[in-house]
Length: 102
Image (cartoon, rainbow, N blue to C red; front, side, top):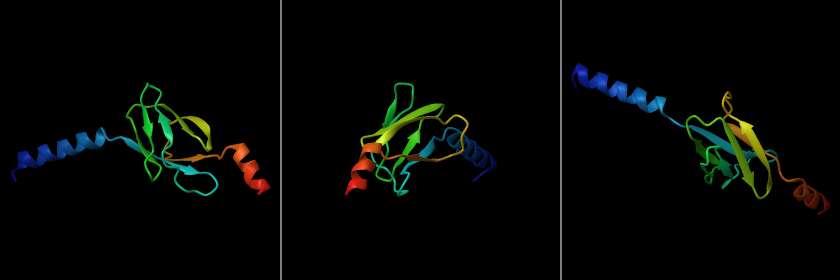
């Protein structure tokens, strides 16, 4: 490889890293287990679902997200100035009450 090819490859790598999306993992607050198929809304009419491991890629430039799942309390949060990559979901209160009676 010549010098020009190496520089071009490095610049391409820098561009890829600069445009990389951040990932976020959603976990149960009690068990620490991943919460699969959580609905994630990015606030700009876009959204998606976490995968089987509770992971989703957040679109670049997203400042707020809203997470929802049938078994958990809906959670809205700012991610603009956070280094956190894990969000903990709290189980719905009536589900906790049902399990307490069993």
